[in-house]
Length: 426
Ligand code: HEM
Image 1 (cartoon, rainbow, N blue to C red):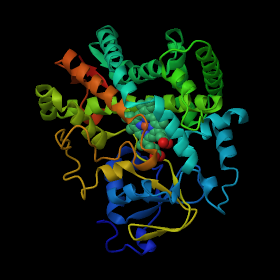
Image 2: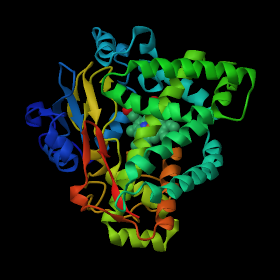
Image 3: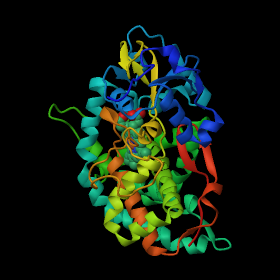
Image 4: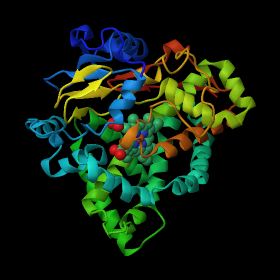
């Protein structure tokens, strides 16, 4: 690759340790990670709640190699000889998660490697198929239209917050629909969804307990009376050897789908709408040529994707990245926003260009990750974003930001790029 140039083999050249929780970095991740990207292939970083520093990887080729290399694992207990101590217990305690519920949060698909991971992917993929996602499109459109209908009534002084009233409700409703959460429970799920956000930040264990119990109950109901939903699919799914998902696995999976698919998609919609409204030329082009939509969504994922970095990966053995050594047991963070704005791959990375990707099927960016843990919901998220942007632009041709783009309120959260509010005039 192009990586690993001058100071490549010299870890000391990596310079000072960077604090990934730094407010300045959260405020300007594009500039901040660009500086790290130019400094060295690997830079030492400190991350929330971790005693030992990690390696921060920001160059496109290096991010791809970390995520594509099975010598890096997600589950640190899989690293021979690595003492992870009681990391998990401490994290559960810090978040107020009761011990018997911890497994639902910590034994998800993203925490598995190798055969265990392939098995989960295989079983889920049998029922969470491209066809199922496509079949959901008319419902995504209906849900979008009904949310759009309500917007004028929610405006105060002509201004409405699209995060609260559009970007958030759409994905949670779609996931409920996909999984098969009954209509009458949706309101409750939206509350839990909000509580889980708090849980991510520490707290609100009651919501987790209620959700887990609720999903167990739903599984029992679907066993007795199957439908066409994903949950029924998960119950029925088995592979050639007759292997199936256990109840705990299904509950964990449903929780993961809700957790992984709800906020991320909401903020892709929020960031994307804001980006388009701040780039009138690109917006006009998209209105003129709606067929550009799939490419526009790829570019918005690259330019302002909501997820800035992956889970930590642990080296199972000594590995070289960009010519620099990562020692067995060390943790690495692949910075997706670094890769997606790497000028080695994307010319003028700061320029929003919805025609950048050559066609609508492929994506070069790594906003959905890469390799074995590539986002399971990418097709669904893209579809939701396409329908959301398309519907909004068609329905409200005069849509405009109610504040200057630079005055938009961002929610500063490590690893995430998101708006607190998106005030617009319809
Ligand atoms: C994995 C991003 C929407 C379910 C991932 C990863 C990323 C990502 C970066 C890889 C993490 C890593 O390797 O450490 C996003 C973004 C989304 C989105 C930016 C929206 C714009 C969704 C949706 C769903 C979903 C809608 C489900 C319906 C998952 C699951 C995984 C995953 C289950 C784990 C896959 C595995 O471990 O094999 N996502 N995601 N995501 N995503 Fe998404």
